[in-house]
Amino acid sequence: MADKVVTYRTDIIEDGSGKYRWVYELPMLKSFFLLFEVWKVLLLAALIVGILLSVLVLIAGDGLKDVLFSFEMAGLVLGILLVLSIPAYWIVTKANNGKYTVLFEMDDSGIDHIQIKTDKAKALDALTVFVGLLAGARTTTAAGLLSASGGSLYSRFSNVKRIKADRKNNRILVDGTLIRNRVYIDDGNFDFVYDYIVRHCPQAKIS
Image (cartoon, rainbow, N blue to C red):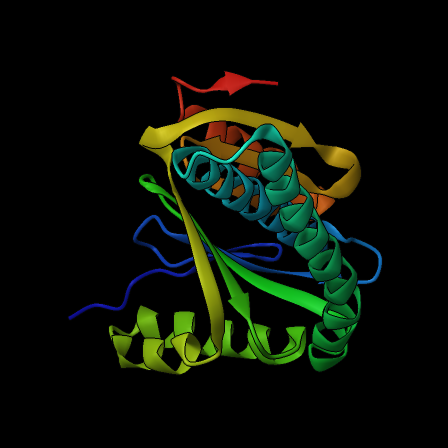
């Protein structure tokens, strides 16, 4: 069987089957988006808990004073968790050598945001080996790359509702109904990735 043709676009690798891959490294102490995302989740969780407790209090026949107390307790727990999240973020940052390294995989169907636990050099080596062997139809090496993965967030283009370009931060926001994805790309490839995403999401609002 003939080898697939492997095409390189600067830091983007295209494996010949229409799938593009690249690795981006983000300094965690200069970009606190991960911490902010944690805070959003904690705030939503505290709000839900407060509402549920208030409903239970009302069902039990207690007064408005007890309802307010339920929200106060939820707020207190939220405050404690927010404070604890700061040193926790520092610990996670040190564990990742101060960097958030992510592998992006993009094709006609969507884009996958995959955290890599290794540093950028190792991630790039793994990516190069993977794609090089893929060109020879030896796909079993995918397991080696996946073993370094720390989590994944996939955006299907058919579900994307809004796309926002943030060139200053090398970021493209890809928002769906339930999935909010952040796509990071260097200056030289920003227009290519942005145009590709917009072209495959005709129903999305562009901002």
